[in-house]
Image 1 (tube, rainbow, N blue to C red):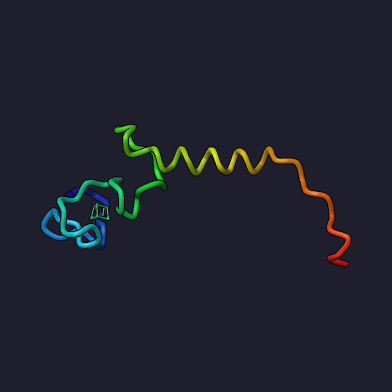
Image 2: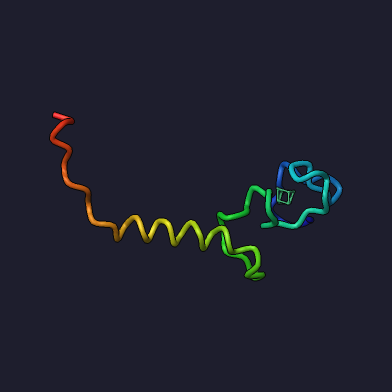
Length: 70
Ligand code: SF4
């Protein structure tokens, strides 16, 4: 994919990281997958899963201290 950002895995519009498939930023296996929000919402599932897990962890009550640990 041509553009202002140059991915080190892209050569001749092919992705060396994902089986030399045509570069499709955000596709599964791409270095951007799960890290950024894309206009194509199909590419945002991984990010949404990560956000849901983080939110769940933040809302979880703290566990009581372990007396055996002292
Ligand atoms: S699909 Fe992702 S990892 Fe592969 S070349 Fe494109 S931007 Fe880079």
